[in-house]
Image (cartoon, rainbow over all chains, first blue to last red; front, side):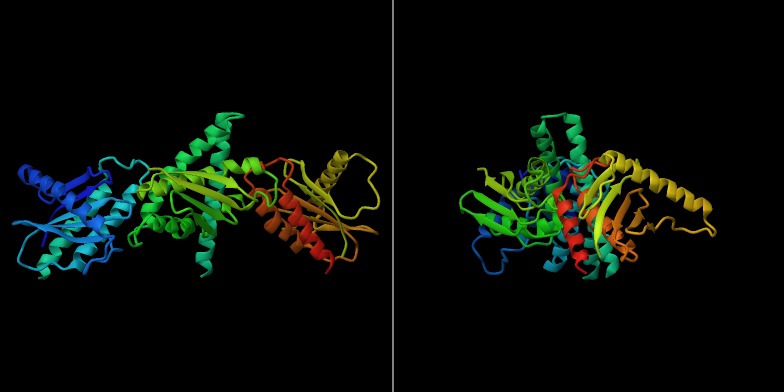
Length: 150
Length: 163
Length: 140
């Protein structure tokens, strides 16, 4: 269940940050499609959060599995400030635990909040911060660590 | 425990003095009779700070159910982070207006407790207005905030939600 | 104890604040002159004391006692000078003056956004808090 791609979508639904663990051109395009398509699912989930459903805590930021495809699973997380984080992981037979995903998203959220406090960053700009990049690298590392545990 | 108390006191003083100096600098740059300009600049300063501050403060807070939930969060956790106290009273007309009342606004506390310095006090509220505007806009609520001094050091912030 | 009056000077010899509670006899010179006289006297006294001192001491002038009043003096590291005249029955009031500085002057003058350093203190809040404190003391 290694994460292969991390994306940050702004509240106006354009991508602020998209990075895959192995930057190769074809895979990159595929991830862009995946992430783009998942935005719709995120919007739908967020709008239905008003009506309580079984298994979905309306006060949680974590949105869970957005949709599985053949090769990948896509997970979503929406913050209070309407910024969405998308995590794409390899679709292996091992069951990925929600707690692990939540932890990855939490770290991403912390890194994002720290980056927003950078005085040289204007909200709405593409994210180019090295610190944020490093945080995302450590998230990739952490998710690989989960695979080796299983 | 005494160490943490001392640390908290220092950083609050620091912000108050910094704010005093920012206002004084802006007033000097703008010249006499340009209060509106000074207030506008203070508000835009507060806007950016509010955006970042709300991201940090709301990180561990569960999702806001609705607009009222977000405004209540501003009155409690957000105001405590910024000024070390809650908003004392919140009123709403359940349509598009919220009135936040603070009985002892920190930045006015050392000014006066009566009628002295009322005109000057208005400028010292602009930064807080910007804080609220920035924070609420980052949470998805576009609004306009105006502040009024009732009886020093109490003041009210009127939030009008724009659609 | 009866407190007669209080002067507050800054390090540039301007009198920032003067308040009297009981005064039976005027100095006979205009207020401005009286402030200059007071500051000059304090300055000279401090200089005399440090020069004629028998042992090296950190503290300098604490005050002086005349036949019918006592003058108390307190100076801060930043150069603010607090001069208080009381009746002769009063002992050491360094703590009182320190309290006036730390809890009243700093709170309502230094932390007052509108009060600029070097200017005369106009804050009514400061005057009110000072009055309250002095009244409290006088009744002890």
